[in-house]
Image 1 (cartoon, rainbow, N blue to C red):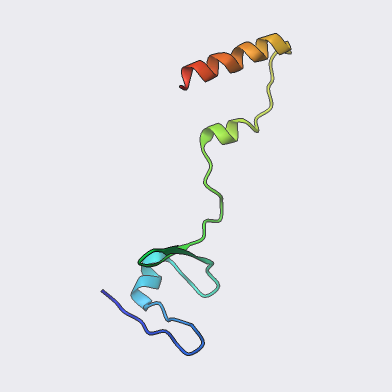
Image 2: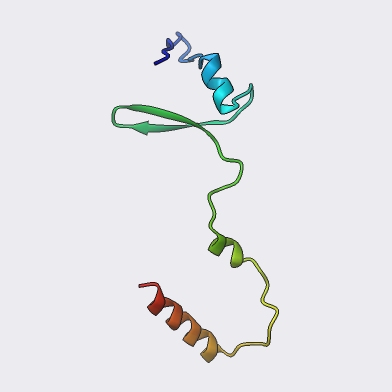
Length: 83
């Protein structure tokens, strides 16, 4: 397991083979996750984690107008199906 040393400025050097394996280049944004027994480093995602359901909520509806009652029924049906 590769090791590194903490400098007096609080900096570490990530070994070249690890940087290359992860595609980390100068300027890469690296997230730090603090755990009880250490710290995990991972490249910051450029796009937040999203699901297809999150994206579908942004798609415009292109059908006939729905009444409030129809929308309420659809919401209730969805809630029953996803219990």
